Length: 197
Image (tube, rainbow, N blue to C red):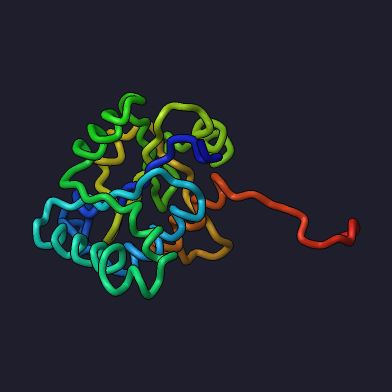
């Protein structure tokens, strides 16, 4: 077992808000597939789910994955192939939860990421300790203008937001996923031999 224990990721494309606050199903981004799967592979995540109810978007994801895991892309870039093999496609969060449960460890604890403080926030330190257990944890990221409030309210935990030193807080989900994974699973090693550094 890796240091991440049983950590899974899911990128949710519905239900999310658009810029007008309406509930929509967002489009899948090719960049999200590549960058988040590479981060997931780097940090030892068990699987990375793309969740969308839209059949055309699921077919698009299948074509992209196939190109990089079986087609010309697999021969051109074997490292990318290994990362994209982590991707699984699901129609809903319930489908993801049921599939993880069938692995034999029970239903996963769901942890939502959110750009704003929430009364149910859990710290990175607390979650980092929790995910070292054998229980599965499912880390949920939203797309578009974020996950709906109803969706967030159903999660077991809400992870503390990533906050910079300015009033600007519009990270891409790819950037946020990488930062979150490093905070939870990253390790620091002394690179320099000089003990004063």
